[in-house]
Image (cartoon, rainbow, N blue to C red; front, side, top):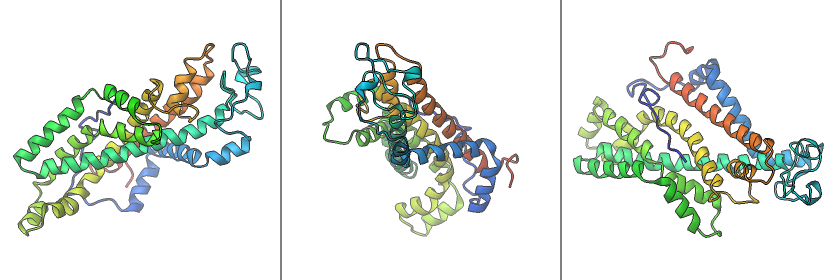
Length: 318
C-alpha cells in the first residue's frame, strides 16, 4: 500500500484571487483537453459498470458467488474448455477450483474497489482539510502540535497498522467500510499538509484580513474565505488519491487482509489468480488490466483538471 506523493507542480495553486471558472467554461475546457476527457470517459464507463453490475450479469445469466464445479477439472481444478472456460454463458471464463463466473466477479469487483477508493478519499479529504485549515489558521502552538501529528501520520508504518487492524476487526462489520476507514486513517497526512500550505498562503490575502478585522469568528473565516480557495488544489489532489486508494485496497486484499471471498474485488481477484495451482495469465490480466486502466484514467483526469483550472495555462481553450 502506497501513499500519493504530490509534487509542488501538480498541487500548484492557480491563484486564490482568481475568480472561479463558470461551469460552462469549465466543461468547455474539459472537452478540449483530450487527455482529461479520455480519463473522464473511462471513469464514467467504470462507474456505470459498477452501478449496473446486476444488469450486466443478468444479461450473461450469471452471478459472482455461485460455484460451478461441473465446469472445472475435479482432479486439478482447472477450467474445462478452451481459454479458461470462455463460452456464451461465461464471457470471460470461470475461476479455477471454484468455477465462479469471472465476468460477474469483475463487474461486481468494480463496485467494491471503486466504492472503497471513493469512500477512503472522501474521509481523507474531510480529515486532512480540517486539520490543515486548523493548523494554518491556529496559533504557533496549534500549528506545531498539528504539524507533528501530520508528520507522525506520514511516517507511521501504515502497512503494518492496516494489516494488524484488519486482522482483529470482527467479521460482523462490513469489510469494505472497514477498509475505507483504515486506508483513510493512515493516509490523510498528505492532504493535511497540502491544505495547511494553501491556508498559510490564503490567510495573507487582504479579504481574509478584512474578515478578521470585521470580527468574523475563525470558523466563519475558514468556511467563507479559506475553503473556496482550497477547492482547486484539493480537487486535483483528490483525483490522485482515488487511484492511490485503489492500489491500497488491492494491496491489502492481495496480502489476504482485505476483501475476502466470495465477495469480489479486483485486488482479491489478483491475489487468487497468482496462487492457484496452475495459474493462467488470463486470471491476472483481467482484474489487473481493469485496475491499470482505471488508475491511468484518474491520473489523466487529475493532470487535466490541474491544467484546466490553472489561469496561467494558455494551451487550454478558453
